[in-house]
Length: 72
Image (cartoon, rainbow, N blue to C red):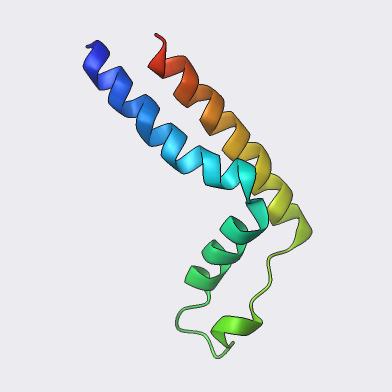
């Protein structure tokens, strides 16, 4: 059981750290993925400020969960 929690913790850290440390780049990447199929150029996509803030707090939360699962 603890091996599964360790794996979940590592995955949460791998997803959470980029969102917490570089929220603008992470939000921009997700916005670029969302723009696939639209007429907007890949380079013209910019994330909204609320999206960057949400990405930062989501990354912090996932990182905290990852640390909690690692030491559970």
